[in-house]
Length: 398
Ligand SMILES: [Zn+2]
Image 1: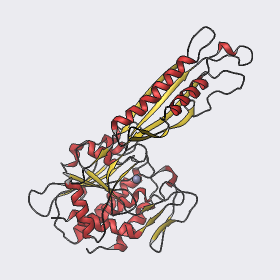
Image 2 (image 1 turned 45 degrees about the horizontal axis):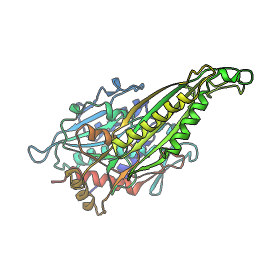
Image 3 (image 1 turned 90 degrees about the vertical axis):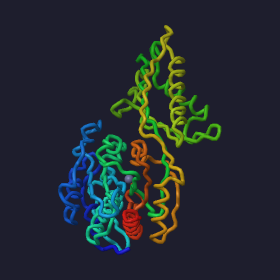
Image 4 (image 1 turned 180 degrees about the horizontal axis):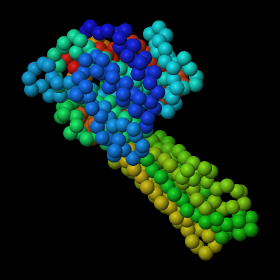
């Protein structure tokens, strides 16, 4: 299919140059709206939703939603093309430049680049540009550029599905290879523990104290012995767990002096699995271990430690069937651009997790991202161009 690859690469470079990390999407939202109008999308077709008013973290703008009326067969169902507009904080200050068939960072080694996910943004705007310029017949198209993907899939989670115009299928661009079709993604819980012990002089009267640190240690030992830590496999079911922060709620060290029995420890952890029930079981194993441990650590009067365990569903796992219409459409379009589709699942969360939950079967493709979330990040322009071709093939499929 005809495609102005130079214009597409310029567009990508332009979006990569915008400093707008997750939670600070204002400038990229503005740039995308401007770029869409420049390629001929009417201003009235471009709107920001109110998802940011429901996102629990401060967010300057809502998701950007663009609606292109159908120009092909009457009665065709709308199709959703989506991507996220934010980047990870490590991208702040990146200076992108084209180097052969790559886009790299002039400041390599100091910041990430932001190909995750300005590649997706450029694919969608290029799709709009080519459809309009080439006057290609297409079904009604909804384009969705989400906010705060990187900080918790919040834009996708908090959107109102009714704002999308009823798409039957969704195509998300966020990854490396255009020929990869991600048909399933993991689900995750995030959990938090407050362990309350009691301070006492550790040299003079340690028996009067209740060590929150010891509760943590015993709980972790039980979780470890029970096979619930790290890679978790139980009766053929698989998942993972990890403990991140151990300290105070504001990130300081739990306990400060060696001569004081530690009275408080805050713990943050997570559980993941492609099996929603197993995610909850892993989290439950931690909860039980912390309460068992709290009951064991007592002061001289038999008072035990107290534990408050809370968990929150970060995202639900999903797995689309390989014969689902959205998967078939993806496979046909990938073959049409001369590639071989590769169906796979991922152990990271995607905006697609929420789209599937909202009732829109959504697959995810790559668009040239490489070494994301690292200071070695670069964009592979061949894969990016391939993703642009793929979007065009998907939008013009019969
Ligand atoms: Zn991403």
